[in-house]
Length: 212
Image (cartoon, helix red, strand yellow):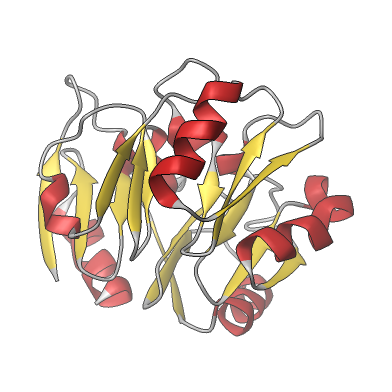
Protein backbone atom coordinates (compact mmCIF):
# COMPACT_ATOMS: atom_id res chain seq x y z
CA UNK A 1 0.00 0.00 0.00
CA UNK A 2 1.27 3.46 -0.90
CA UNK A 3 1.12 6.15 1.76
CA UNK A 4 1.93 9.81 2.25
CA UNK A 5 1.92 12.16 5.21
CA UNK A 6 0.15 15.38 4.25
CA UNK A 7 -1.42 18.55 5.60
CA UNK A 8 -4.15 20.79 4.20
CA UNK A 9 -3.23 24.43 4.71
CA UNK A 10 -1.15 23.43 7.72
CA UNK A 11 -3.90 21.28 9.24
CA UNK A 12 -3.12 17.59 9.80
CA UNK A 13 -6.79 16.74 10.39
CA UNK A 14 -7.33 15.76 6.78
CA UNK A 15 -10.16 13.35 7.50
CA UNK A 16 -12.43 16.26 8.37
CA UNK A 17 -12.23 17.37 4.73
CA UNK A 18 -13.45 14.16 3.13
CA UNK A 19 -13.26 10.41 2.65
CA UNK A 20 -12.31 7.87 0.01
CA UNK A 21 -13.77 4.63 -1.31
CA UNK A 22 -12.41 2.31 -3.98
CA UNK A 23 -14.52 4.23 -6.52
CA UNK A 24 -14.22 7.90 -5.57
CA UNK A 25 -12.76 10.56 -3.30
CA UNK A 26 -15.23 13.10 -1.93
CA UNK A 27 -13.54 16.16 -0.45
CA UNK A 28 -14.35 19.76 0.30
CA UNK A 29 -11.11 21.12 -1.16
CA UNK A 30 -8.02 20.10 -3.11
CA UNK A 31 -5.80 17.75 -1.12
CA UNK A 32 -2.16 16.86 -1.78
CA UNK A 33 -1.23 13.45 -3.21
CA UNK A 34 -4.85 12.49 -3.93
CA UNK A 35 -3.72 10.77 -7.13
CA UNK A 36 -2.28 7.95 -4.99
CA UNK A 37 -5.83 6.77 -4.27
CA UNK A 38 -6.40 6.17 -8.02
CA UNK A 39 -10.08 7.13 -7.98
CA UNK A 40 -12.35 9.85 -9.29
CA UNK A 41 -11.72 13.05 -7.32
CA UNK A 42 -14.91 14.99 -6.60
CA UNK A 43 -14.54 18.34 -4.84
CA UNK A 44 -17.68 19.82 -3.37
CA UNK A 45 -18.75 21.79 -0.35
CA UNK A 46 -21.36 20.38 2.00
CA UNK A 47 -23.63 23.05 3.43
CA UNK A 48 -21.17 25.58 1.98
CA UNK A 49 -18.27 24.23 4.06
CA UNK A 50 -15.14 22.27 3.17
CA UNK A 51 -15.89 19.72 5.89
CA UNK A 52 -17.19 16.90 3.72
CA UNK A 53 -15.67 14.36 6.10
CA UNK A 54 -17.86 15.61 8.91
CA UNK A 55 -21.10 16.08 6.99
CA UNK A 56 -21.07 13.10 4.60
CA UNK A 57 -20.54 9.34 4.75
CA UNK A 58 -20.58 6.76 2.01
CA UNK A 59 -19.31 3.68 0.25
CA UNK A 60 -19.06 2.58 -3.37
CA UNK A 61 -22.84 2.26 -3.63
CA UNK A 62 -24.07 5.50 -2.12
CA UNK A 63 -23.64 8.60 -0.01
CA UNK A 64 -25.62 9.81 3.00
CA UNK A 65 -25.96 13.57 3.50
CA UNK A 66 -27.61 15.81 6.13
CA UNK A 67 -30.74 17.82 5.42
CA UNK A 68 -28.70 21.05 5.58
CA UNK A 69 -26.95 20.17 2.29
CA UNK A 70 -27.57 22.64 -0.55
CA UNK A 71 -29.56 21.59 -3.61
CA UNK A 72 -26.71 22.39 -6.00
CA UNK A 73 -24.34 20.29 -3.87
CA UNK A 74 -26.69 17.30 -4.13
CA UNK A 75 -26.98 17.75 -7.88
CA UNK A 76 -23.22 17.94 -8.30
CA UNK A 77 -22.63 14.73 -6.33
CA UNK A 78 -25.29 12.89 -8.33
CA UNK A 79 -23.89 14.18 -11.60
CA UNK A 80 -20.25 13.48 -10.77
CA UNK A 81 -20.60 10.08 -9.12
CA UNK A 82 -23.84 8.59 -10.43
CA UNK A 83 -24.54 6.65 -7.22
CA UNK A 84 -27.33 6.60 -4.63
CA UNK A 85 -27.66 9.84 -2.66
CA UNK A 86 -29.72 9.88 0.53
CA UNK A 87 -30.52 13.16 2.22
CA UNK A 88 -31.48 12.00 5.67
CA UNK A 89 -34.29 13.83 7.47
CA UNK A 90 -32.96 14.03 11.00
CA UNK A 91 -31.83 16.75 13.39
CA UNK A 92 -28.36 15.20 13.31
CA UNK A 93 -26.17 16.96 10.73
CA UNK A 94 -22.65 15.58 11.27
CA UNK A 95 -23.45 12.40 9.33
CA UNK A 96 -19.77 11.62 8.70
CA UNK A 97 -19.32 11.36 12.47
CA UNK A 98 -22.26 8.96 12.80
CA UNK A 99 -21.65 6.30 10.13
CA UNK A 100 -18.70 3.93 9.72
CA UNK A 101 -18.96 1.88 6.54
CA UNK A 102 -17.36 0.04 3.65
CA UNK A 103 -18.90 -1.78 0.69
CA UNK A 104 -19.78 -4.79 2.87
CA UNK A 105 -21.65 -3.18 5.74
CA UNK A 106 -22.33 -0.12 7.86
CA UNK A 107 -22.12 0.68 11.55
CA UNK A 108 -24.50 3.51 12.37
CA UNK A 109 -24.89 5.59 15.49
CA UNK A 110 -27.77 4.71 17.81
CA UNK A 111 -28.88 8.28 17.05
CA UNK A 112 -29.72 7.11 13.51
CA UNK A 113 -31.29 3.75 14.31
CA UNK A 114 -34.74 4.87 13.14
CA UNK A 115 -33.20 5.61 9.72
CA UNK A 116 -31.49 2.21 9.43
CA UNK A 117 -33.58 0.89 6.52
CA UNK A 118 -33.10 4.08 4.49
CA UNK A 119 -29.36 3.91 5.08
CA UNK A 120 -29.25 0.24 4.09
CA UNK A 121 -31.07 1.01 0.85
CA UNK A 122 -28.74 3.91 0.02
CA UNK A 123 -25.50 2.11 0.83
CA UNK A 124 -26.60 -1.25 -0.51
CA UNK A 125 -25.49 -3.17 2.57
CA UNK A 126 -26.51 -4.28 6.03
CA UNK A 127 -26.52 -1.53 8.68
CA UNK A 128 -26.29 -2.20 12.41
CA UNK A 129 -26.62 0.38 15.18
CA UNK A 130 -23.98 0.17 17.91
CA UNK A 131 -21.40 2.24 19.77
CA UNK A 132 -17.60 2.39 19.54
CA UNK A 133 -15.80 2.83 22.87
CA UNK A 134 -19.27 3.38 24.30
CA UNK A 135 -19.69 6.49 22.13
CA UNK A 136 -22.46 7.20 19.63
CA UNK A 137 -20.14 9.12 17.26
CA UNK A 138 -19.07 5.90 15.53
CA UNK A 139 -17.91 7.66 12.37
CA UNK A 140 -15.39 9.70 14.37
CA UNK A 141 -14.19 6.59 16.17
CA UNK A 142 -13.26 4.50 13.15
CA UNK A 143 -12.05 4.35 9.56
CA UNK A 144 -12.90 1.42 7.29
CA UNK A 145 -11.90 0.20 3.85
CA UNK A 146 -12.74 -3.04 2.06
CA UNK A 147 -9.56 -4.49 3.59
CA UNK A 148 -9.58 -3.35 7.20
CA UNK A 149 -10.99 -1.12 9.93
CA UNK A 150 -9.14 0.95 12.54
CA UNK A 151 -11.08 1.80 15.70
CA UNK A 152 -10.85 4.09 18.73
CA UNK A 153 -8.28 2.59 21.10
CA UNK A 154 -10.91 2.13 23.83
CA UNK A 155 -13.28 0.08 21.68
CA UNK A 156 -14.41 -3.00 23.56
CA UNK A 157 -13.78 -6.53 22.39
CA UNK A 158 -17.53 -7.02 21.92
CA UNK A 159 -17.82 -3.89 19.77
CA UNK A 160 -14.80 -4.90 17.67
CA UNK A 161 -16.18 -8.39 17.09
CA UNK A 162 -19.56 -7.04 15.97
CA UNK A 163 -17.96 -4.50 13.65
CA UNK A 164 -15.67 -7.15 12.18
CA UNK A 165 -18.72 -9.33 11.49
CA UNK A 166 -20.72 -6.52 9.84
CA UNK A 167 -17.91 -4.95 7.78
CA UNK A 168 -16.35 -8.35 6.99
CA UNK A 169 -12.78 -7.13 7.42
CA UNK A 170 -10.03 -7.30 10.03
CA UNK A 171 -10.54 -4.82 12.89
CA UNK A 172 -7.93 -3.39 15.25
CA UNK A 173 -7.56 -0.39 17.54
CA UNK A 174 -5.25 2.60 17.19
CA UNK A 175 -4.87 6.36 17.37
CA UNK A 176 -3.85 9.38 15.32
CA UNK A 177 -1.46 11.96 16.76
CA UNK A 178 -2.27 10.60 20.20
CA UNK A 179 -6.01 11.07 19.68
CA UNK A 180 -8.34 8.04 19.72
CA UNK A 181 -10.61 9.72 17.14
CA UNK A 182 -8.79 8.17 14.20
CA UNK A 183 -11.14 9.41 11.47
CA UNK A 184 -9.84 12.98 11.88
CA UNK A 185 -6.41 12.27 10.41
CA UNK A 186 -6.96 9.60 7.78
CA UNK A 187 -8.19 9.37 4.17
CA UNK A 188 -7.73 5.81 2.92
CA UNK A 189 -8.96 3.22 0.46
CA UNK A 190 -7.70 -0.19 -0.67
CA UNK A 191 -4.88 1.37 -2.71
CA UNK A 192 -3.34 4.12 -0.59
CA UNK A 193 -3.24 5.80 2.81
CA UNK A 194 -3.10 9.56 3.26
CA UNK A 195 -2.48 10.54 6.86
CA UNK A 196 -1.91 13.79 8.72
CA UNK A 197 1.68 14.84 9.39
CA UNK A 198 1.43 14.34 13.17
CA UNK A 199 0.93 10.57 12.94
CA UNK A 200 3.68 8.76 14.83
CA UNK A 201 5.73 5.79 13.67
CA UNK A 202 3.90 3.25 15.87
CA UNK A 203 0.53 4.68 14.74
CA UNK A 204 1.53 4.32 11.08
CA UNK A 205 2.70 0.76 11.67
CA UNK A 206 -0.70 -0.13 13.12
CA UNK A 207 -2.46 1.52 10.15
CA UNK A 208 -0.39 -0.49 7.67
CA UNK A 209 -1.20 -3.71 9.54
CA UNK A 210 -4.93 -2.96 9.43
CA UNK A 211 -5.36 -1.55 5.92
CA UNK A 212 -2.90 -3.59 3.84
